[in-house]
Length: 427
Image 1 (cartoon, rainbow, N blue to C red):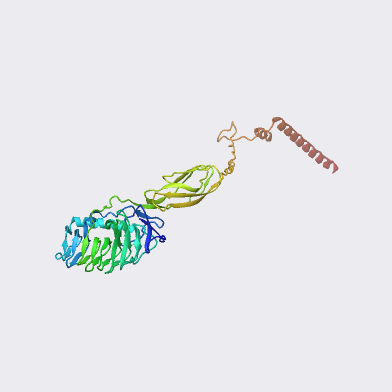
Image 2 (cartoon, rainbow, N blue to C red; image 1 turned 90 degrees about the vertical axis):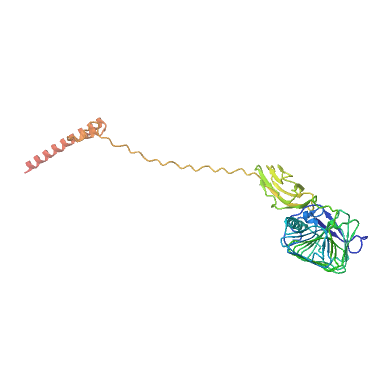
């Protein structure tokens, strides 16, 4: 349930806080009261009374003990689990069933914890309350650290109107306190979620169901039109009258929802001609739907309203501011702003491959022995001319060279003889 407070209208009664009640969701939590639990920007709301389950049958329900002094009357069931200490009945009277340390009492305690979680999770208005004395409150969720009542508070609404008070620490009422219902408002739909203990010091009537983490105690002469339900501690009564509301909408049809909160990063950029796929995600219950509420997606891209996926193939480079909004019927909506930059398609640079020439190993032909050579055959000396012939030199050239050498040898020999004879004649 989301509460919005605004200054009183000119015609409003003094002290009358105007509120607006949104229909929607809750995240169930147990343990110490966490006011406004859930995502920081989301609102958890409810469109009806809190469902108490089997705990709705009880005027008093406790965990560790139930103690009474004096002629207390409980018009409703009495339950205790897991402990078993119930004292003071009689003289106290229980106009209902006493379930002590049994299965119905344990089930009622489980249902109480669930209801407490729902009440804790509802998102209140940021304006906190303390002493409610003198206020005239419209339906809504009101939160504070310690909530007190020293005089009268008026709740104005219809039979379907719901009030939830979240006290992070304690709830205390004085001997002159009272709660007045106006316009058909019902005690069935007033809930006091207390993070520790509640103390009602007489007076009356006090109206509504107390859901306390720890203990609840009443002073002599207290009148309660509602329920005293303590999840971990005791309920202590002194000469008190408790009447469980009847004919109530039990809250089983109440719808609890949470407004969406976007959890994804801004949409990234892309490139012309390259497939694009990115998704906007959010929390919330029920699931959100997505729309473009400002700007435009790049040409070629589309938004799936159910999944939040932006996909396609960009066709035009540029910078495209766009706002995507997530909504699920529960205020407030959430938005994400992105600037999608589409880069132009750059042709790839073709680098020619480096060709390494192959390494060529020179082939040296084997030296073959002469065709007519015989292994281990004795060689016969041959003339120089024959050797030249065996080497394959041109035959004509070999003959010419050989003839020249022979002629030269003859000339040398003749010259030598001539010189010897000349020397002999001279002597």
